Amino acid sequence: MAILAAICLLAVIGPWVTPHDPAQIDVTKALLPPFTTDPAVHVLGTDNLGRDILSRLIVGSRISILVGVLGVTVAGVIGVTVGIVAGYFGGWVDAVLMRIVDAFLSIPTILLILAVLAILNPGVTTLIIVLGLTTWVVYARQVRNEVLEIRERLFVKAARTFGSGNLFITTRHILVNVVPTFVVLSTLSVAALIVTESSLSFLGLGIQPPDVSWGLMLTGGRDYLATAWWVSTFPGLAITLTVLCILFIGDWLRAQLDPRLKTTV
Image (cartoon, rainbow, N blue to C red):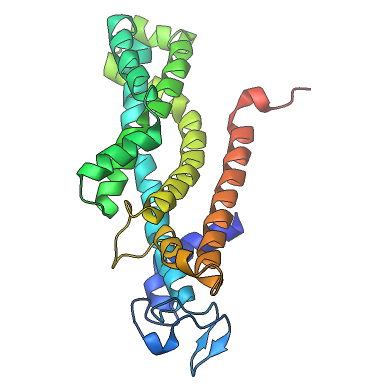
């Protein structure tokens, strides 16, 4: 958790603490190995255009994490809303919404993302929207299943008996009880979207220069794996470390928030 907090802090204050200008090109310093002093110290070396890798890692963390968090936010808002509406009202509303969910689930997510990005102009905003609009179904199905059980609880039936409206019940009684499920799902989804962003940027369909992301840095180093391993290795390690930290936190949150996983004495 401390490691992830440090990464997030760097993502926020990154532009003010980078040792070098991450966009400065100097071909005379291209592909310098780590800990080179020429005359400035390049702790993690430079890329094929002479840009400092450490500085680009720090700045790139902002976009990579931003895409993951905002993509999950978009997906969560849509998915939780659809799930609550389908589970609470049931009947034909549930049937229609779940058929839409099934239609989305029948198409591999990565193919759907690639198809949409091939039509739209790649960029940070586009990527966030596309990732959100193609991953909301996970939240919708899980939340709907939770709501089907919650709506039959005594406190919900009591609220109906006392004349509470549907909006009041869904926001004050249903929504608050699906928050733990959303928190766990969103934590794990952030990790998945960071990897997805890196993969799409590696393919040239994600973040575009002059913006910097870890996935885009991987793309820049793929031609130098044999001669300058550090160009791709350090962005890859940053992605791996961040994703592992998020997954560990997600597992911990699941153990804390899911009563079915708690041991009873």
